[in-house]
Amino acid sequence: MASLWTLLFRRPRHLTYARLDHDGTCLGFKQSSLAPTSDAWVQVSEANLAWLGRTLPASARVCNRATRHWQQRTLPA
Image 1: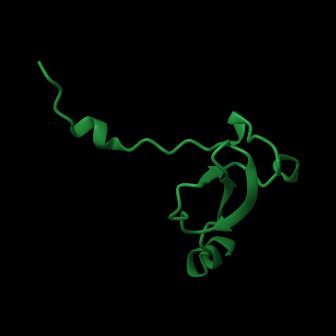
Image 2 (image 1 turned 90 degrees about the vertical axis):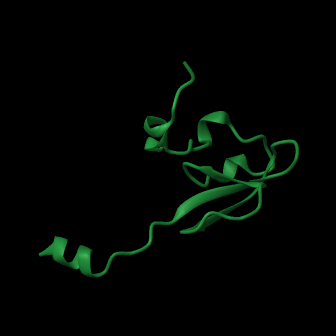
């Protein structure tokens, strides 16, 4: 029965973003279902308050998922 409720009332998935300045220092966090349009925001795994005012660790960033478009590319001979 729980799966039926999940299908009927699906919530948007909120992702966590960190705002960085030009030096890579974390200025703030944001959770949203849509990606921010500014280049200053990067997707992170969590909102860790210890990162505020410090350089964001490389392990905090979330890599973009690979798409299957690479299978459709033509490779030079």
